[in-house]
Length: 196
Image (cartoon, rainbow, N blue to C red):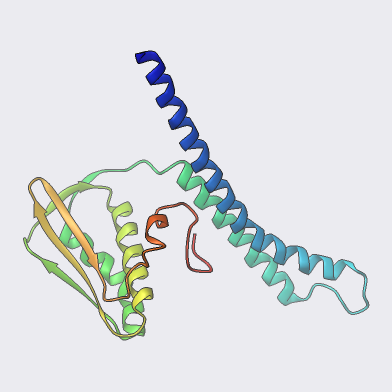
């Protein structure tokens, strides 16, 4: 009975993995199709031997941009499939957050929004990968700024919870619609045209 239960659990896990892989492949295929279609149309137009119809400098620029986009998509896929190894070191979280906020400030100023940091405890330190944590925080801040549009405040709060440091990023935007919420961590799902 135990063996049958374990085999049944393995089959369920395997089918869930295959379903997730299918979703990932479908999303990836959809993202790749757009730049490929643009490149194909430009090349087809130039290859029809219509007098005066050849690749212009602008067409070549578009093709290069689309190849760059394909390259980034493939890299995103590889990064997802093979996440980078964390390089942990003990850092002052407040300092790291302040450095990351500086990277997002130009966009905030451009759209008339503010970014504020709230420390409930000074001198919080934790063992983290500073580059990966900066990347996560920057992505959250940029998404928050984009969601808010003009005006509003993005707040980063730092607090200690036992042996854990908690960083919260909060904005005054409309929030994630309920119908989208279950899908926000699905790879390649985005409501933005250029999002991956």
